[in-house]
Length: 209
Image (tube, rainbow, N blue to C red; front, side):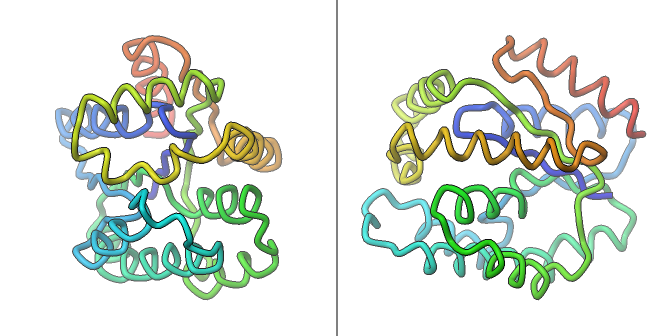
């Protein structure tokens, strides 16, 4: 089973993915927590290129193809082998992020993105996608607080530096995807306290399991 965690910057999805992994492990449910980009050693190198704030001249197609390269390696090296071993995969961002960030916000032709998804993913889709939703201003405020508190985060803030309009397009894109795939998406109110959000996620996983 593959569960993806999606949302705008500062939505808290990474924190909650770590917490639910611990919750699952306490219940002896085999699982793997991973992320995109950067779920493999090769992916970590790609992540450094993609998120480096100095790379302001990266064209959208370069960005898209780097994400696809990361995903191809991720699937081959980690996701598919671990799923075949019977483990639940918890993935911090997956292909929906590409659809909204590169397709909707960067305005790359959606047919191109769908073709690349088919080449890289074949028919693989998450069983469930948790969409952590909150207002853009609130998310970015959280994200920048995290960045200022952690020097390593300052090397990966290229997307946080995008315009408010860009992030509004991302949020709108996610909500539109959820509207059209209600069986797969579960919207989580990420504007709540961390504990309330976690309680909501536990309820979702109790239903899934």
